Image (cartoon, rainbow, N blue to C red; front, side, top):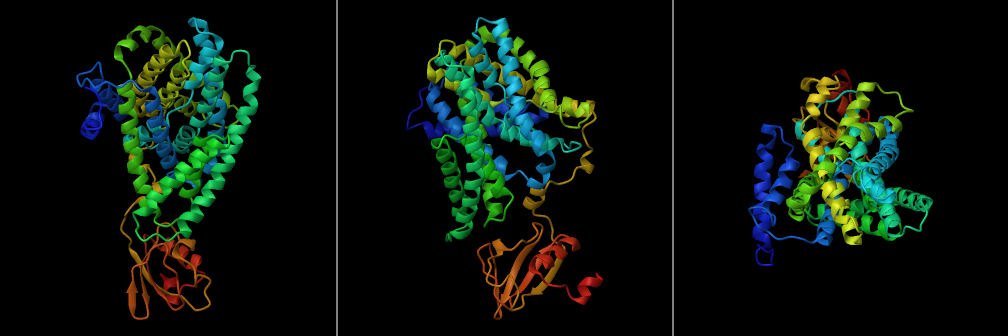
Length: 495
């Protein structure tokens, strides 16, 4: 069956529906959802029962880049600065040095056991060097693992921020394969340019995005997520055009927005959470359609050797070397090594050699597909078991909500107070989004001139307003009074 304009919506919606149903039941059997998405794509492909012919690496790469933007931006929005601050340098070291050491060790191993040149081996190593954000985010959250000592924020920070390094190494080593007269030292200036410009523009665009979202006055709440999508693609494309790493900029701008007050923040975050899941499904379906199972069979032998080396030697080596300057128990280092999930990102990066037309591009793509599949199957299905075995798992009753989970939760608010805003109060003339209000508190209503107003982030506070504030606990209510610079009355202090 060929994909045409007439049937693409029917085929696409049916594949999405089947993938969602497959994902719903997959964890009953301990199979990661992402593997099911890939399986649906493969079974629907030209060599599967669906018979859908799809052989367009360029389109698959485009879909992959778009999907990664959504996944990384959503991951950034969900990243709490308060949570990652204690592990920031560990995460950065894993994202840069860990990826580099993994890429070099896998590249040297591939060069040793195959007829690949050293640059071709390093290219393959670079493609599989990063952990996959989509795989780590979805599997950790679906399994609802409670981990000790900041392990979870470390893993999520690493997986969300190491794709840019893997992308850089892939492009750099691909350039060395195509232009073999170039020196390997020529990639150093490119690395500095990509990382420095990407990081700087990520924060700059994050600040600009916050200003745009908070200053622009849209008539409909549903337009704010659309505005955020437009800003996300501007960040990626502008950074890429200026020579920076667009993926890094998108992730950092998402982190910045996720940790600042913006209008309709819950709406934006929920929308991106759904879109990230949609993009994961679309991405894995597309890559499943692109692969030919008959082409995987000849590389299974070498693929097994590379998978075993990557999982049991290269990944632990990269983790231990990159964390050598940090105090951390051995069992936690081993667990970080085990959560080295490869997923769709390496397969997307493997389309770059295909489009460049290098000699061993097909072999690289098929090996990467096999390695990614085995990684998700072996490591993804055993995260909980290994966590208990290494004693890094917490009982579910001991698991605390992250700041993002607390913000997104619609829990009951048991404390209600009416707070009058004096004429000289600093909040007069400010919009609600500009107040440093605690995240667990909401302004349910505003009584103004004998009328009740249902506020939103754009609502401007006026003198003599009576704010009806709901919070979850007394401590949060104290934070409300502090942010408004108002002393609680005598009765409030007695409670």
